Length: 595
Picture 1 (cartoon, rainbow, N blue to C red):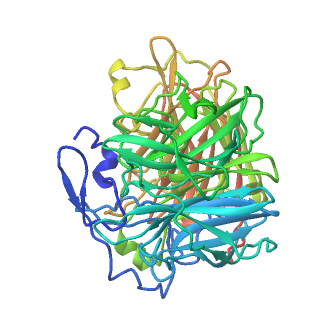
Picture 2 (picture 1 turned 120 degrees about the vertical axis):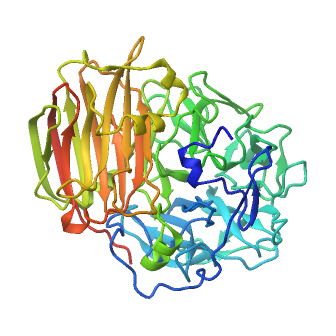
């Protein structure tokens, strides 16, 4: 099958929660999966700290987010996760799937944590768990909406019958006490479900209701689905939020994209970086439609125009509508959700990263899954893509600082960044180069291959012209292990192409790991002959932001030598053109509160 790229060899698409056999496509190819019943309630006695993150959100133990299967390959399948943030009465709320009894998927509840800064978190009792006929076989993904009167409501997908049917419906839950800013208790009224697949929808591929928006006297929501191999964002309208009617046509759909999971639809300002409430429409607004593709296990978004009178969304002609489209993150990042932070007038994006080791390893270490750092999200001045940057609150965790300035790196040079613990750090660096004349020619045949493939062909050890240059993160002293994050510049027929890579192939000496070469192109003006990079390094995760957040890549890695105090950080250049580290600022990162 043509879509069996490097990622899909280890992560075949997951269709439903507990299927033992999954039909992948019209060719009739099937893959069998195992749910780890013997592990689901095996509580962690000792939680291993090696590879556990220091400043990313994760519970003290056990499984966070999603469904878990094992394929016949040695690597795990990506789950169908969710995490749903919300801001209410000065408090941020995070709802996420959690197994309170073990480090693999099973016994799933909607766990609930609260924060006043998106960094320090307090866990509360679970908000939702299977208990009624409309969700007795599962409480799956959903979204929160703030109704008039400052009243929050959750919409979520409930599973009403067992395998093999697993019919999906859309339910709601409300707080028991609106005056409680922590919203400790939630009620699931008996007039659920609100939306069922009664009008031609596929009831077994019908999930993940979005945050609602209000326009022209009606609330609107989307529900992700598919019709054969066509991805669908079904639209539903309601005047009172209780009685919903399906629109005659979906808000948007796209052929040959498969199931659309975790859709997200929201406005961004054309004028500045200020975030907008989900219901804002108008001339100074573009809209974003993001979907998580079950087939590729990546997320894609388009920018376009929403026509509220006819409830249609039309992507811009600069936004590719499909597998070759824009991504928030070109690495380990899935089932993301944005929300409008009314306290600071910004839109926040939050994504999740799964483990890249095995189920056995997760059981041994006692935990699995992390939330990536929340990111501010806004429209680039070009209007052609979104920009992302770690929320400003993250900087409160910065500790010791070291700097490098005007360090020249000739071909094969690398210089160590000393004075901070390199396993838990925040690094910002700007590289410059005197000329682009030595940029390698961009082979036109590369247009037909994924950037990830090009990165694997042109890795950090393959000599280039302008690049590869960047950072060697989580490196051992003698470089037996390292995760390079780097740029490589090519000369195409009409412009320069900048490739950004986060390459895990050399990240660990351990066998049995998924170690991909993640990559994406950076649409950046090189007139000043500079490129910037920020990397958040946290023991088993490296989140990297290229060119001010134009391209973002997150990798999960499991070094055996480059751990704790034995981890090192280097700036390097393996191109024939000399590169200068204009400025490099690196901070140690403190641990936040995770009670």
